[in-house]
Structures are given as C-alpha cells and as structure tokens.
Length: 576
Image (cartoon, rainbow, N blue to C red; front, side, top):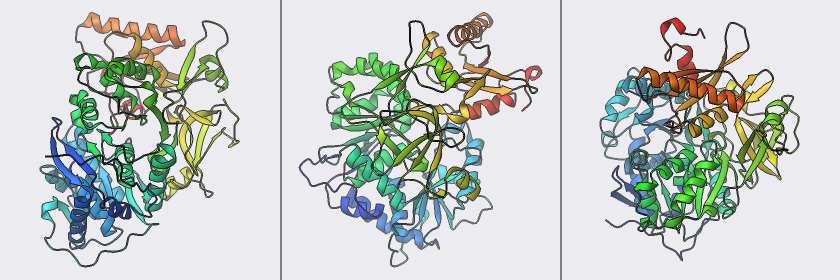
C-alpha cells in the first residue's frame, strides 16, 4: 500500500472556495489525499481525494434515501478512519449538517458515554446517528425513543441513492462543533460554509503560507476543532496530503507521531503543549540517529495554555534529530471562531513575555519585573489577528484597554460562528449584535499581538488578588518529584459566605499513609512559599481527574466532583 504523494510542483489553489464541497471537488483533481493509520501506526487505508469525493457523492444519495432532508443534523462518531471521512463529506454533498462526537475513551465508562451521546443528540436535534462497529449498538441504546431516520452503521444505509443532490449553500451550515468541555450541557457551535472557508483561507494562506511542498501529519481527534479544521479541512482546502494517526495511538506510543513525520517528511503538525511534553518525556526511547524531523517547518501550538518550559525541553531533546525550534508557531482560537483567531509568524519560533506576578494579580497589568526576587510568569505571544479579523481587550465596563492591561478578550471577523445551535439566549450573551464575540478568555495586547493569561471563569480571587489556577498547578507539577502534567487541578469555592477557599486536587499513585501525608504537606508548603496562599490539598486516585474530550484537564468538572464529595470522606463533604 503506497501513501498519497506530497506532489511538489503542482499548482495550489489557496483555500478560496465558497463551500467545503467545492474544495473537495478541486482537490479531487490532484494526486494527493488522506492516509489512515492504525493504533500500531500501520498504514491501513489510502484515500486519494478523487476517491473520497466519489465515495462521498455515492453515500450522500444513500443518506437522503433514508428520508433525511437538507439541513438535518447527523451525528457521526469521529473515529480517525475512512468511514468518518466518507460520512462527513457525504453530508456536505447532501446538504446535511454533520455533528462529530467524541469516542468513549474520555468518559470513563459506557453509562457516562451513552448519557453524553444522548445529550448531544437532543441538543443537535439530530435526525440520524452513524458509528462504526460495536459502537453503533451503543448509539442505538443512547437514541432509544428519539425520532431518528436512521441510527447505525454506514452499511445499514439503502444501497441506492435518492436522485439529484442539492447545491451546497455558502451561507448554510457546514457542521456543528461541540465544545470539548461541553459534557454536561453540550452546545453545538453552528459553523457556516462561509465561516469555515474564511478560516481555512486565513490560516493556510496569509497565516502559514501552505505550498505544494507541504504535508500534514496529525494525531489530533477529529471531533475537536484543531484536528478537524486545522489538520483535516485545511489540508483539503489546500489540496495537501495528510497522514492521520488515531489519538489513542499517540497516547500509547507518542513516538509514533514523530516517526510518521520522519517517514513522510511532514511539514505541518500541531499539538497542545501536553503533546510535546509527553513526546519530550519519551525521548530516551527514541532512536535519534534514525529520526529525521528537519522537514517540520510548522510545529503548531494551540488547544491549551502554551507552556514554554516543556517546549524548550522538546526542542532540546529532538535537536539531534533535526528539529528546529524556530518551527514553533503559536496560535490562539476557539470553536466559536471556527478555529484560529491569531497566528505568530512562521519561522520565528516561540516568543514570550515576562510579567511581574504581584502587579498582574493586584493591578491586572502585565509589567516587566523590576528588581531581583520578584515573582514572575512567562507568557507566550500568540500573534496578530488573522486577515480580516479583530481582537480587543476590554475591562468589566466594556472599555477597550491599552497594551499590557489585562482584560477580557473580544473577537470579530468572518470566521465567527453563526450561533450556538438551538440556544438563542446563550448566543445573545456571547455574540453581540454588531458581531463581537466574548471569548471568555483573559489576556493583553503587546505590540499588536495577543497574549493569553487564562480563562475568566477559572480565575481565583483571594483578598483582592487575581490568581491564575494554572500557575499553581504548574508549580506543583514542575517542582514535586513524581507529579506529571495533568496531575493537579486547582479551583476555589466559597464556604458559608466566607472568602474563597482554594483547593488543589492532586492525583496520588501510592496508598502508603506516610507517603500520602508527605505529599499533602509538600504541595501545601510549596504553594504557600511560591504563591503566598493557604491551599487545601486533597489527594485523588490515579486517573480520576476529569478531562475534556480533547484530553485537557477540566477544572470545572473537577470542581463539581469535589463539591459533590467525590474526593473527600463523607464527614468532610462540602455543600455546593
């Protein structure tokens, strides 16, 4: 089996299409395509864009033969395989609206997953649900009693199509993107064809300068905006070959990602910081003499708070394999903006700013530290807004702030969502009549570039100080032996009308009483010394801290579990 070529020398149309279907029509004229790999990293399906188009067109007619009508929502289990790709693009040709959903792994059991699937079906007002293999039976169980035209496998669809296909509408919905953290009350971000193609063009054209020599490699899940839009749909929009590795393969064997970049001479590949961190920790098992990462020109950063230290560790570990730290390309965005809102210049590497933490917490100003011994924090610069997009930082009264003043980030541009599907009140709270999106993020501007300091809803306020929970989490994970990235969740709660009480949930891998007591004291003492805060340290079992479907720590769910008593003896439970 031979993977699709990179095909240098071909002409590239740079994402300037009206619809995703039109983009695939054009990509089908090239020899490039999608290469699907197994959990072991083996190539299991080669899908040139021309074949994907032909198969999606056939499947589109079969979908409509079930009684579905243009505009209907179709939930798709977002496995990184050919069936998901065929179904997603079939929806584009049929005028249907796909809603990719996560696989069971992040949900910790069948019951929790079925509950999540049912909530998504209801939220999307879905008329169909498709999943591979045994997962289709779970979908049927989750959809029990709902009015669906079909729920099952692709093989369950009628064998014949339903006649002429509708013409895709550039202003119509392209897909629903459910937030990776939206597990309890899922809301689908309604992304139009026009918004998607505006983001694809801005990312790949003026942003990354995608060319015929480029090739994408990705392990990111296709139910997450960075995996779906950044890695897959941008590749289609620029007719670039893409190699897909299942997310589970990366989690089990992170070096498969780097091996694939080396083998295929990949040039563009994104990951959250934790992905680079995990690969850096496994560098000792890598054969650096056989690994060649010199082709990697865009090592994209996004999907979580960018942490400079693990990235420097990755660059140092893989420099002998040809990795160039100048390839680091930071970005900022969210599903509500299709994907990206800003990008740093390609080839400049990670650039950072250092702020005085005392002034940041007390005055909401990102000033340079003055004098030795001052607490400080290093933030990543995430670039200027994409072409035709705007970013503003505002205070609580809505006034636009100057540079280095920390406030709430607002965005406007052609890539923004149409609405939260079926949620007009939440849409009105988030998206203003004149097109400004309240991102919910905090940050500041520096020389026109955006710097992200955290999520507004996560901010901890103690005695007038604005404390970012990730600062406390990273301190513990970095300085206490045995703790790993994602082992600590910090949040606050108000007890009995008193001031905020700060809690650190810490995953503990030992049952030995003295070792557990020692860990509690060490975490509390470290955070008191470094941040001047009294912290309630609560030990949690391994793998018990909840994650979003994209693999990030979910502080909001961790807090909810704590408040319900999940991590404390019954006598110490806190009332919500």
